[in-house]
Length: 157
Image (tube, rainbow, N blue to C red; front, side, top):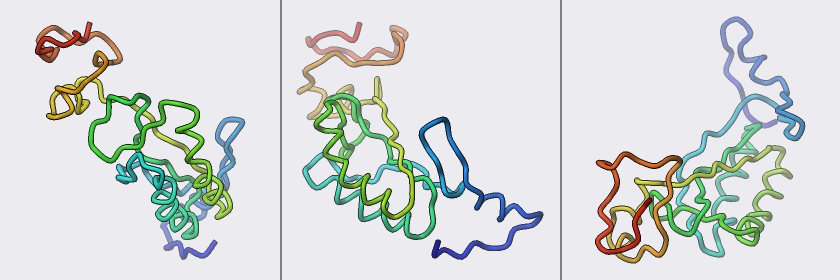
């Protein structure tokens, strides 16, 4: 590990550096993690390389766990442009080269997945809203007052 960890009162610095087993699948070299943010890697063929550029640097600095920022489970439902879509096995597997280089640099990696629901670009933002192909999805049926106008398109119910 190439990173220098500052001294912390009461041995907290040593605790942060201890390995940790999470469930039965993830062994972390330490308890340092990179929080998920919107990296803006997009959904193109270069998304894995864009992620790798940031994540390998994090891993080389000593981070034990990298959490890739919110990726969308459906083709519609992104909350901002630049989100990666992982709606199919093929789309998920195209990130495999990035995962391999992060693992080779010594870190574990998780992906944060989500769906924008009423906050999705397709719910309110033009041109996405007028081009929406599917009903909006949400974890539960929103109250009537919060449901967007469908403008003649399919409803959210």
